[in-house]
Amino acid sequence: MASSTDQKTEHAQPAPALGTSAMADEFLRCPHAYYQQALPQAPVFKDEETGMYWVMRHDLIQKVARDTETFSSRIDVIADVYKDGMDPEVQQIREGGVTRVATLLTQDPPVHGTYRELVNLTFAADKVAAMKPYMVEMANTLIDAFPAGESVEFVSAFAAPLPVTIIADQLGLPRDQAGNIKRWSDAIVDLLGQVGDREHQIDCAKRERESMDYLLEEIARRREDPKRNIISDLCTLTYQPLEGDPRPLNDDELVSILTQLMVAGNETSTNTIAGGMWYLAQDPGLVSRLRDGGSRALLGFVEEILRVWGPNQGQFRRTTKEVELEGVTIPKGAMVHLRYGAGNFDETVFANPDKIDVDRRNARKHLTFGAGIHFCVGAPLARQEILASFEVLLDRFKTFELAEDPNEASVHCHYNLRGLTKLNVRCQ
Image (tube, rainbow, N blue to C red; front, side, top):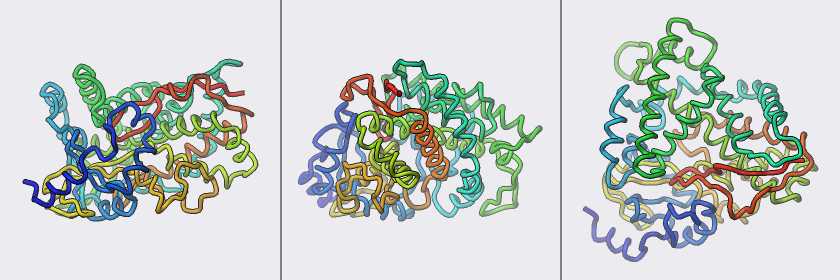
């Protein structure tokens, strides 16, 4: 039960502190103005619509992310985000298949470290840097297929297939499965974001189960016939648990890790590449600045688009005890949402946060990849994909413009991810 302090605080800061629903179209389309209004007034508040406590300020997000004893990641990041519980049929579908185990995103120290060290080297910066020529070649191949002299739907033609094909290659999945990987990833993301009606949620649960069944088949194949890829590496390496003898990872652990790599390995890059094009196509001056500024300007642009677009708007925790944060009492067992997107617009950290400043010196302090022990293991891969994409696009085309009203952009209606579902542009 909430304390009297908690009740007074909530009464003084009635939800939503944003002044709108976090699932409203106008907020999902562009939440920046809402963040800038709410941040000074209520850096911590309870979102009554979901029952979650939002943490919005940059320093507070980092504080919570590092306090793993009080703010635990040991949650089902899909089922536990539903305030009134998940639909029984959806829940029943999800209970089939493998046993869900906590490995990376949903694990706390010290167990988290035993799994994290297995995948750290997979996306090491030097290894990812060596992939750049392959990324450039893939980007050029996709651009070669753009319709000559016509507008192109950029998400399906470029922003989505490039990262999803790369993660398929790295995992060791056939390229002809790239479409399914995207279907499965989108389904898991929609379950996480409570997107769509009941029928859509049921369909998403079925696709999630389909992905798990497929991964189990691939795991069995790679145990018998290992290749040079992530699945084979994870199947053949030795895992050292905190207690007991060294052993191979079991099916449940492998599916958990591979599912997270599959989803995170394409969603962030796809949404950032599409978001970057959305900005470039409306700002010829920014295009000129990138051409004149060379590689340094482009590196700054990558970080600024990650910050401003914010493909990953937040992540979840659960309190292990009652805790007070910025005058707000959060009860034990409450769901907490670290709102990275808001922290990226904290004016005490980023001056003129609405501005894309390719010379911003502290741009890499953005929270898009998270903070603390759960900082995204795939960050080097995402950065390299985004960088290679815009290097090639700027080399191949002189101008970019939207082929649609920017106010009509098709935005994915998602609680904590931000992306465009379609973007029609002219590249000349």
